[in-house]
Length: 577
Image 1 (cartoon, rainbow, N blue to C red):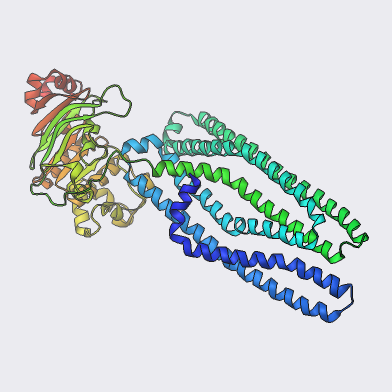
Image 2 (image 1 turned 90 degrees about the vertical axis):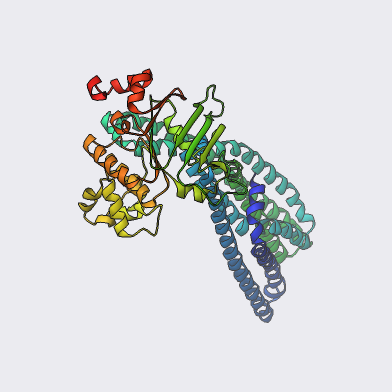
């Protein structure tokens, strides 16, 4: 998965990668040439007492070192730039894919996991690429070049390398093999910590209300401890890696000095050659250590790449049309024909053979007990998810064939728990219509019964709104969300229990103002409160995903037992009449 991901997203950067490799090749060759020059100076300059020779070849060493430094800076620059571009592109792809997901796919992965995959997982892959470009590219060149140059200094002494390199490879391989499953567990437990923390921050009021601080602290401590345990196990293996490598290095250095001294004593080797051989040995070992450092990162990056690819390869159940309809002839006509919706693996569908017709200038209401499928039915219209059977038609056109932009302009849904974005009142109201004037915003606020409280804020339309709208009450959030929809001015309004946080007086005033504002549009209201929907032109009664009644309030009171039970649970017989 890691190779597949890198091949896909590094493709556009072939040119800088080639340049980077050339720079790494030049700087590595310069590094390999320096010990030979040093040996030459010792044997032909220092030992012979030739100062001119020392100065001449010392100047050459300075030039070679300068080339090495310049090439290294260039390689690091291009490596960092390419790795950052890769991270940017992968994050954008993951974000784009998540944006295309329906509620079904988002629920499958979970918001905490999607956040971790988009941020931490991408960062791990990006870091691996950065280290590969700055370290791993030069490591094999350094290792192979070091062996060749060491052989050039003394072939018999190079036998030490035949013993050192296999020992290093086997030691590193055994440690890395044990680290890979630990890294997968670490990422999964990081998801858990993210999820628990997100729940505790979002549900802070509930925790305080039920005095569950101690329980939540213990829950977070448990998740945190599990992550720490895995991190400690991984850290132990990482800590074992470098002492193992350094032990092999030091033993090999002792062996080189020991056998090299005998070679010099017998006249088969010069002092400069031994010095160069030790330098090449250290370069070879350093290249192995760089590769070791990479091997530490590869397992975790590979796990992260698998998690990223899992998101990228998941197809949304809401598929954009291949030849979208971009223009509608009728305006505001909504029809649902035999709609059924079933979650994957569910024994029973949530909706079964639901029919609904909503016309412009009319208000259609949907009521039913909790879990009867009311919100699911509304979610089919803006394609939060698609019906598994049947059709949903907007202006006579199946929503699955409509251009998503056109559908968003035609249909607007106000959920029961609306979400406000961090910014100001104005930026939130202009979310669906960026060109709306201040006068249009104030008019929408007036209809939504929100003008008074917005005028009471210190900066009015420019008053700050916190993420999620946490600095305003639930009723104020609902009214701002309704105003946001009014600013957009769609042809079909869908209100999913959007008045539940309002008091009866505000609810009545808002509905009265709303009926005048949306007189020529199609309005569909889902509500639990009978007083909110009793004046609707047509009421649909849902029970266990089926339509069990349809008609006006009085018709249903006379002929539908399910509706009558709901009404009498909230109103007296006289009030209902």
